[in-house]
Length: 342
Ligand SMILES: NC(=O)c1ccc[n+]([C@@H]2O[C@H](COP(=O)([O-])OP(=O)(O)OC[C@H]3O[C@@H](n4cnc5c(N)ncnc54)[C@H](O)[C@@H]3O)[C@@H](O)[C@H]2O)c1
Image (cartoon, rainbow, N blue to C red):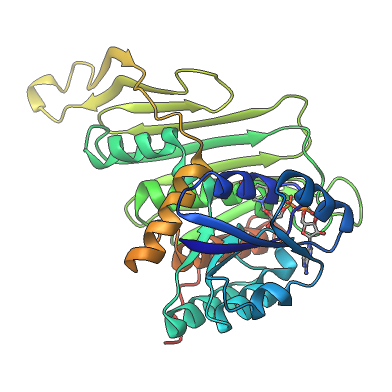
């Protein structure tokens, strides 16, 4: 049994607690939140789970093995470092930290303490993204030529983070997982339409040494909710619509081929292929349930999570690079790739 404590029971924390409560290998030990009303809700829903407004009560408790942190990003570093230093395994919400330096410090501390550090990039654990990963890795798609995402709605305007940190963060983690390659440069444009608030709209292009190109459009100012990804491969192409209730992922046997045959030089050199479309069956299990199980597996077996601290660092580096490019009106920014200090 893993004794688990949760810090932060606002919007996302309840989803974590509900899923952890369902895991047979987890015992919910305690929940901390600054808001006493939130703690009353915990007591009502989970009688027997201890509550406190001081997160240090969890950090100091030797009976707690693992801590999940679902507080606003500005507090992730301080709380995460305290938990790791106390020898706890750590589940940290996305984005991992406010800066990549902080993220690297947490990775180093987890290594020093020999503790599991999982960053909750939930999409990576969804049936749809896992299936897309399988298809890409099987070679069915051929070489990935492009990734094109639109993630817009009339979103909750955040005060402390911009739309890149709030929404593009999902594409950054999905891209790292699907491509297994980090971009070498990023160019982004975007704006805040309301003075004094973080940027609410951004168009981000990511360039990869392999030749793959990715584009991500994120906005909190759209009249409809759109969550679509297109992936073009040299053999096949994928569409993913997260708003569909079924058949979210479709694979199209479509593409083009070029001939260099001198005999055919006078003819059309482009061949178009339009074959079948199929919608693969997807695992409908809630992503947080799979991720929670995976976290416990990693703790019990000493394994590295699929979304570990180094993935978390790369995602924060991309947020920094894209934000810096956006503030420089689209100038190309090389993605920092600093090695961990240890
Ligand atoms: N993985 C996902 O898909 C996903 C989705 C939504 C939010 N998130 C992440 O979850 C985190 C929390 O987001 P949210 O929308 O739930 O925020 P929120 O503001 O709704 O909730 C945060 C809660 O943390 C509490 N809190 C803040 N500082 C604290 C402290 N020092 N000690 C104890 N409690 C403290 C607040 O009182 C609040 O109840 C963010 O990092 C966010 O990016 C992840």
